[in-house]
Image 1 (tube, rainbow, N blue to C red):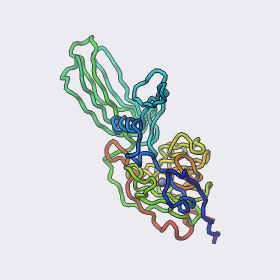
Image 2: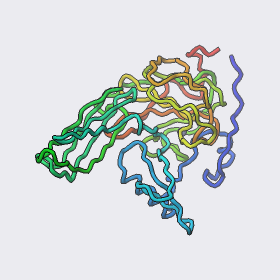
Image 3: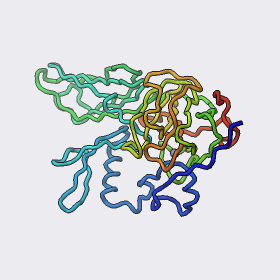
Length: 338
Ligand SMILES: [Zn+2]
């Protein structure tokens, strides 16, 4: 039997964590988000959040940050002269802007809209067209659909009332990974690592960072960096990130997202840089090595953040799940642990 690992040492930003420093010191979990304290948010943060809310369920959005002569920072969804563009994504969000695209083809008789999905998962899309001019039957239009992986799908067509003259409209395109029409199946997850036993450092609804729809039911398991992470359930790898170092620019750090047969997705976060050994589009089964655990992204110490999500209607949300054995119990021998 392997020796039980010593407690893990991790660290934290003192002003943001709980009044129990000893507890914090021993546990790895996601660092709390600033959104946790809405009453203390400065005006610019409120504006920032308002912008995010206004942008609806789009997965990742580009914002423009500028600082005026008095040091006041403002954010806009439109470019401001001298502003710096950055992409905001919350802790569980990947940037899909280049992988899911609205295609607009103008021709003499009107405009044709289609959507391209370059990901390895189905993607739900919604196109809203308003304020249409020179369009036959010009009422607003709403098109929703699910585009299979790596496919282009026609959405709608606006025909010109007066051919040869331009058609005008205002568009809003939203999308989310996954098919909201699939029904999830009951499943108890084997532990997605080799070795241990390790400790649960933050459970579902954890007060540090497990709140909000995308991560509410996540679990954090403190483990030394370099612990082998394996697929807990069969599926297709649909998204990976492998180049984040340290805190990095991406809150999730390095991660692997696996789409399961029933439309749910398992996401393994904060992985060690350069350790991801699967590629997008690859099929995995239970036990397939994915990566090594790490401490990248928004992480207070070495741990694995494992969350199961599904598309609930133009949005990915975390769903409750259970492991098939207690986390802090026996070592995980089931996946060929030596
Ligand atoms: Zn977590």
